[in-house]
Image 1 (tube, rainbow, N blue to C red):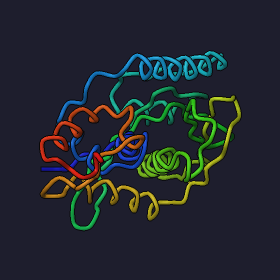
Image 2 (cartoon, rainbow, N blue to C red):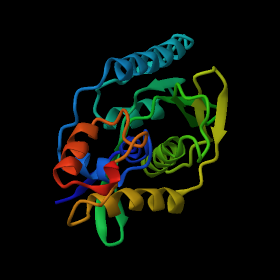
Image 3 (cartoon, helix red, strand yellow):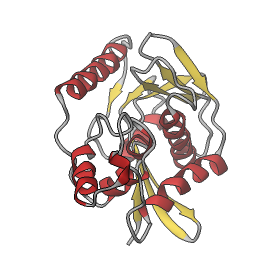
Length: 223
């Protein structure tokens, strides 16, 4: 069975704080609790940020929900902006074939090539603040390169304050190293140990699940 990885999996690992168990549970199909009203508001703000940016382009191809093959078709037609195009490719990682599926927000044509732009409501995109953002974009860069045979011109983040920040595409080796991080966790034979605690677990959809088990086992992490 081919293991499937999505660039958005980095959010399961790193947001709100790094938690290998959250990614593991998500991959195994354990359902989180429904999002809080606060999380729903954050999600709506993100959607609005993205749609407002889309409205600044007079000509674009909207591929929301369309098959991955259509993205390459639109690229070959030299469309100026491709919104929600999808990519799919197989990548060998340590003897396994990993299926990678990703949907970058925007592919924007500049001269004879495209760059990738993601919309995030975060105002900081550093490794310290949001390591998931750069990792997600690196995988998008790999998907673009594997699909088109060309490296993207660059990677960009449109932040919540309206500033655009460039993230250098580091190439295939770096992207595969990031994929390996996810594969190593989702392939574990048993759940990784992660201590329960606040504020680490605050806002996580698995907080109730993990806290209940910690209480049942009288975990010292609850002290």
